[in-house]
Image (cartoon, rainbow, N blue to C red):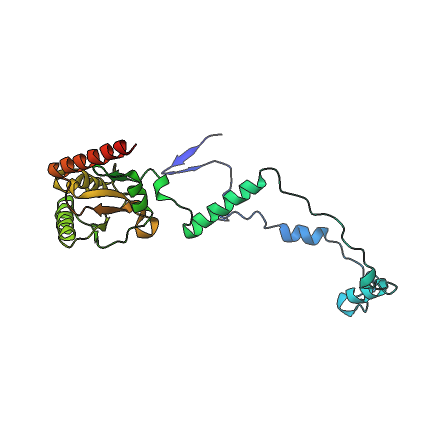
Amino acid sequence: MKWVIKGSKATVPGIMKSSKPKSLFRPFEELQTLLEANSVILKDDGGDLQSNSPDPEEDPETDRALFEAAMADVAKIPQNICAKNHLKQPDVTGPGSTDESETLHHLENLIKTGKGFVVADTSEYVEGIGYNVNREIAKRLHNGEFSIQGHIDLHGLTVEQARQAFESFLQESITSDRRMVLIIHGRGLSSPAKPILKTKVIKWLTTGRWRKWVMAFTSARLCDGGAGATYVLLRKRPATRRYKRRKARRSKKLLDKSQSDY
């Protein structure tokens, strides 16, 4: 077969060109003809193939009618002859269940009301006593046996602002003859390491000129701020060197007297 090229078109000699456009593709063009040739005409059954099942909406035997018919011969049992339940409830209490339930009860009260929380049992608790002071004083101070006569809140202050406010408050408390005061400094939970203000307050109470006036200090009870506040018990007179010497001489005299009595 030889190709004859004319211009940009190629034709084959001896083959006629189709009159239909080559761009149209009709695969189902003869489908109707095939269906008509192979179709089968069904005979009329005269209505014999209709379903004999009744319409559910027209069925007289409803579910309720069927149930009543099935339960027609059932007699009601009187209540007084019903069998009683004599099964015992399983005993879930074990040897350690009482202690466990009591612990859970205390834990529930602690979460709901805070009852049972002891600040002194936490790592945030602080306590200190001054010269020649019985440790029992600190316990009494934490237990709230001394009434609060003044308080100051250092929240939101810088260290320098807090120091100035702290010193002014203690000076005013000493001048006003206040014996027990409350200093609120916060727990410092947002601090990256140690609580800043709380640490500074403890340092100011135990160093410098104010330590002579501090008799004892402890973390406050939960109702007064807990570990975020500190009780401070102040002296009537500062514990100077002269005061310490006089106190030592007095203690020595009392000791000598008690020994002489024996």
